[in-house]
Amino acid sequence: LEFSLGVFLLLGIYRKPTVRLAAVFMAIFLPLTLWIALKNPVKDCGCFGDALIISNWETFYKNIVLGVCAVVLLRYYPRIMPLFSVGSAWKAGAYTVVFGFAFSVYNVVKLPVFDFRPYHIGANIPENMYIDPAKADVVENIFIYSKGGVEQEFTEEDYPWNDSTWTFVEMKTKLIQEGEKPRIEDFQVSALAYDSLLQGFVAGDDITQQLLSDTGYQFLMVSHSLEEMNKRHLDDFRKAAGFAQKKGYGFYCLTSSPVDSIEAWSARHPAGFRFAHADERVLKTMIRSNPGLLLLSGGNVINKWDDSEVPDFESERGEELLKAKGWKMNFWGKLMVILLIFIVPLLLVKLEEFKGKRSGLPAIKKGYTKKI
Image (cartoon, rainbow, N blue to C red; front, top):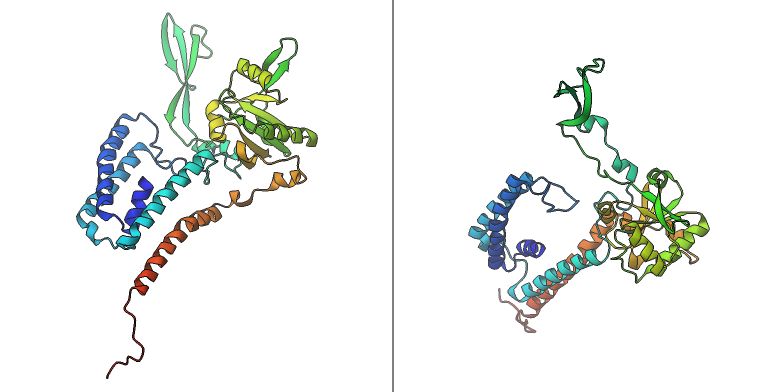
């Protein structure tokens, strides 16, 4: 709806209802964002997703500017120059709504066309996990000691480490100044091993560094919940796992499901996957589809696919598919394609309108000459 309103304003179509609806939007969201800024129930508004993260107060200030613009438009909307006639406006408007809806649905059903998350294709995960120490949080260690039943706090400079009359109780960390945060804070993967004696999976080693440092290929099948997994394309993941095993590449199924759920799922769908545990929120951030497939090499995200687009790695082009990124890597190329898909039909509507006006002009009679 917001997309359609913005385009309608740019095209100058349906000016009066569009401006009024935009003003209603601002009348609702301006006090709402003020309340959010004061109460701070969430860290940021999420208006622009991961593309641009702004604070709650910045969101409120943004809405003040937009609110002023809405008031100005309410007064001067007749001055907006329409780019389409009344007869063509409905076509441009209908296409705008259809395009916005279709693009939204595509980004939900498939992977996002523009991925601004720290696990996008081309991202280096170790780099996104690092933060310059000079820009990190400034913290202070507080030592709590007890003497005669009375507890007292000390800093690293004055704590009584050599006074036996004091008894150490605990240490706390006090935040002095909040610094920058790495884009990835909690990427940690723990392997699960099948114990034949216990007849079940048990916790294994932390394989985070192994996955990120291996310069070979690592396939990560990501399913934040095995119970909710879409199983239509499970055979494609089995083929990918078989291909990885033949070539000596790593293949893990990352999930946040509990061990008993993994055991039950494996019994129902024997696939021979090696399982590993990771945080549910991390897995949802890595890839939206359940399941999805990521290809890593040296900590770099080489490619990623939703469950309906997993390639046939067992085909003759298996090795080529490992390197095929195509337009997924080219942000500006994707942007140009999307803009063309949106703008070209609008230009065709305008061209049709122009031809209609030309055909409506009175015909010039043959033999007519203007007297001078």
